[in-house]
Length: 507
Ligand code: HEM
Image (cartoon, rainbow, N blue to C red):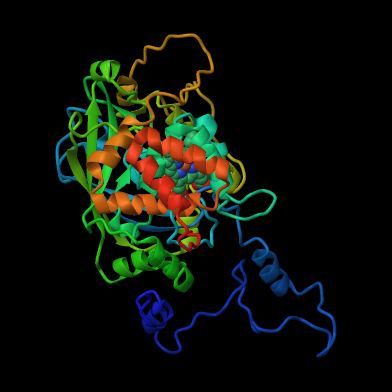
């Protein structure tokens, strides 16, 4: 699986080659003072205790005990890289966002790929969705497009997100995962998850590489053009490396041999100049089409059918630089769905609405108040009225720190104001459960029209391998749920569930 020596394995040799013999710098403390003896603490005699005045040791130990920060509550395991986005097609009729302003325009990007459910050290090759988040460093500030490798998600109301995530994390009593009862109980009680579950159990549930999967914004956004015209949109980024997936058996073996398989693959490809790229597309739906759509265009358990809303080419993403420091540039990167630049707006998508709040909140907890001043998260230019707080780095000097003011402090931006859309909103504030809006038509299309016969076979095998360890009541409920998608699908799952072939649980 892993070559004995690859580019990643040679990282230290490369470092050493770049630094001629005798070129080593003097070692210092974290406060920059040269150290005379690095490998001995300050003791009273050979066997004596260590002195409190050993600031060199205290510096080393106290920094060490603070090396970890909270891992992401979801998407903890991941890999990142840097590159650019280039516009190849004009879409200024749809949006005035400067990132799309002209063909040939290049914008620096950072990308982080991830698994969803496992922790920081979890194996890469598990059956799960993959995160595919892009940070665009635009002249109008940061635009974060925080997508996955699936066009749909398990639930569509953000209030269900923590519960769903609990079912794929560890059981709070046994501390074990996966807990098949938690998973199938939730999935069968919230059957809007059928569509995403079917994609997760299809061949695409375990990509062979981060480079060999597509990405999707999944949620519905909106575009505003220079005339103030408003349309809904979805984002797609399709791999130029070709889709490639692993079977459950391959993935399980690799998880044992090289738990960092995807991370290694991405690092080596970029280090050897084999830069991965994705073509970037949008789908556009007018407000008139949205009003008449037979399915809810703001429901992230559903796709917009390509036949009705074709993919419109926009540009390409290229990754051509590995992180200089994993911690500084990947662990500390923070993607925030609320970071939308003028010309790109949210839609009423219930999931998106919850996400608009949650990411900034988690960054303030995980990375601190001034997380946007960390170099990897920092926009090119900030002229805000916020000041101070833990770890302030950015200085705005003598610029007024209150608004309005009479002393030439930053003021309203006319272009941003012209692009702010008017959202007509009405209705009674109510909690309306949205779980039963036709949960089966699109999964049926997937099963009957999209999947080839052999792909239907692996889908069924994968569902059965996760369903077998669940309790009998949940197995029956899942069979009934899949029968609503297609009677043949339900019948084949039931038949294989009750066959007596020896079975081992697949990750
Ligand atoms: C990460 C919340 C739905 C994609 C996260 C994080 C939180 C979160 C708290 C950790 C962020 C961090 O610590 O930096 C939510 C909530 C959701 C939701 C509340 C629904 C209400 C989704 C959906 C997608 C998605 C639908 C994909 C379309 C991602 C990705 C990351 C992430 C890719 C990892 C970002 C990174 O690489 O740093 N989410 N999420 N999430 N989420 Fe979501």
